[in-house]
Image (cartoon, rainbow, N blue to C red; front, side, top):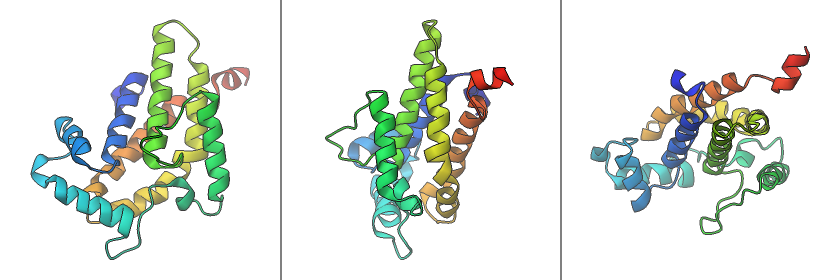
Length: 193
């Protein structure tokens, strides 16, 4: 992941790959997963779909692992999390896909938003514009949302005997690499110290 540290476009690609991995593996998603080398075609779409449903939708003999932040952080209250996420998205005029009907706190939605922020940062840097607003937003979003619930989610995911277990470390490393790259506080605050 070291190549990601100074490359927001590569970071965005990492987030989008993870978003694909944690999307429902319908025929189109399966095609993208196999074409991008994220899943071994020998596994079979039906097997991955059964694992997805068993792990994230029905529980498969164990408790279901939710892909929703609000369900992974009940102490915060889902309504408050949803409202805060919508404010993040609205601030940047990012709209959820109405066809997909996913909630703002779905793992895939959060990953796609972080990818979008990384792409905006990349474009700003490429065009000689200020990238700091996108860096600050990504830092805040990670701290307040994805990085806040990912460790517990990841621990439970890696304890499963599913294909998805192998993606926990990759997702965790991606988030930690991004956090490390962004630092703990905004650039201007660090300069004042």
